[in-house]
Length: 146
Image 1 (cartoon, helix red, strand yellow):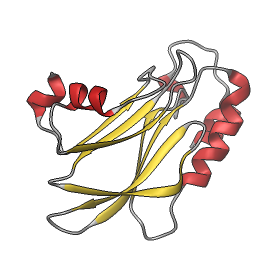
Image 2 (spheres, rainbow, N blue to C red):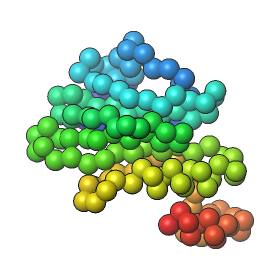
Image 3 (cartoon, one colour):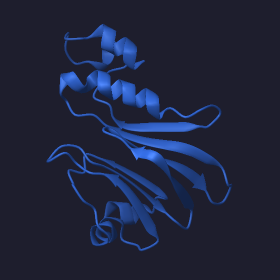
Image 4 (cartoon, helix red, strand yellow):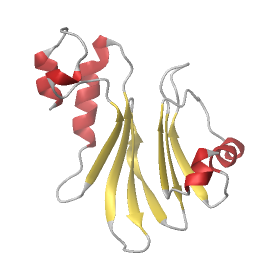
């Protein structure tokens, strides 16, 4: 309902917890048939990413591979201006053992220059020590994330 009321041109959802999104569910979430959706399935009850766009305003080009373990990427073109950028949505589970794999995947998503890149989502990492609510800080990991 909120998506339908806001009338966005692009929607990114993290932690959908959905293993499959069919046309019926997509229509229920987005409310209009002019929308298209790509998704990364959830792992049991964890994760899941969806990127949806209104075809009246946006053209998306699927990438090979656009779906990875922790991310979903697509090339977005704004129909009005014909300008493009890479959009990557991420979701990283909380397991400490997966952090380095996640960071390696994130680096592999980075486009070649000069392609603009928007990377958003749930990184489950901190950029600065002040972002942490306790003293348990892994400064080496924080530095790698930067």
